[in-house]
Image 1 (tube, one colour):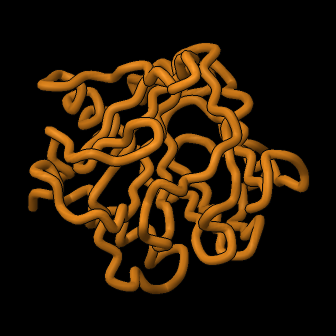
Image 2 (spheres, helix red, strand yellow):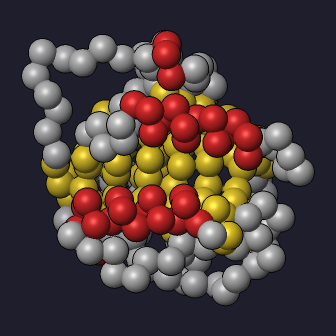
Length: 215
């Protein structure tokens, strides 16, 4: 997506929530896209998650480390690379000035093809209240950060573009959030990605599975 007339500025849309536009340099974005593509080559691939009520999520997801299933975590088969955990700690230093010993044991990689959305939900299957680190790649989206009580208002909409960092912890850790819209075709063509990738890293507080983290 072409830059606007004015640079996007760092913001804190809610207590404990920090948005850092363009945090990832373009070459690092390309490296992450290549890594996400490699993650999906096996033994697992990106899949549409079926919910207990019968619905199917429009995004496709792949988990590194502990694997998320509705609505729990189980030991996964894919390892969470140590370099990705290190990147998450760098992100927390950027957002909060310290990573506080953050030791993520799961990364959810969500792929948004044209038309994919994410409904309002809480990240509450974890037994840890440490922050969630979110990295955006590809198409720009509208990220909706709501309140901790329900899926309704008040909420704040933030546009997340490729390379953006978004962290939510503290008072916002269990806020409802979602992605109501993705602007198809807004990614820089040189990135080599059609659609949007979102990587979220977190601590589950559930102990290490066989695919937790490798250095």
